[in-house]
Amino acid sequence: DADVTQTPRNRITKTGKRIMLECSQTKGHDRMYWYRQDPGLGLRLIYYSFDVKDINKGEISDGYSVSRQAQAKFSLSLESAIPNQTALYFCATSESRDYRLQYFGPGTRLLVL
Amino acid sequence: RKEVEQDPGPFNVPEGATVAFNCTYSNSASQSFFWYRQDCRKEPKLLMSVYSSGNEDGRFTAQLNRASQYISLLIRDSKLSDSATYLCVVNSGTGRRALTFGSGTRLQVQP
Image (cartoon, rainbow over all chains, first blue to last red; front, side, top):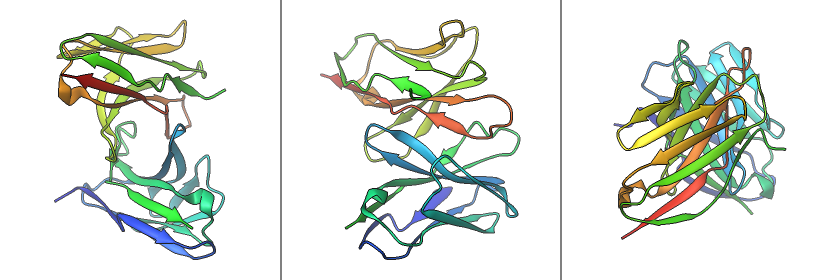
């Protein structure tokens, strides 16, 4: 079984809809991250969490919110989706002692029409 | 200017060739450097860390030039399975607990 899982793997939604992407991990890591990947722009950090009570904005947090429900779960929400949020979204985890080594989930492809 | 810049490629090379990629970073306070590999439509995975003195892992050699603020990845004896996008990744200094990813260099190894 994969250590970092994401659901759904693919999603098509309409402008203005609320959507939640979920991430779960069995690695026991404290830190979790949400990135989006767009062609030519690489991965950009949306939000990151050091533990359940410590959540931080990344470089492109506008239009997104997150929830760290438990150490193993980190959800990303788009409150009102817009077409330029169409992207590939990755969740990642890392240990506190070596946050530089990150383990990624398989990604969620989101299309906002 | 992007914090981490890479030539997007693609680099098309025959099997057995040696190929090198460079990556430049803008923050002179950057402390840690990595190469990640990403296969098409898959998640990124750590390929190797980059150390100041340079380091090798089999056919892969990574080097860091702090004065010129670039890192490189050399792949010797290219295999078809090396075809992927290689992401340059930088951790920029203390207090910033996250990584900055380059947009990647695509490598296509041809038979």
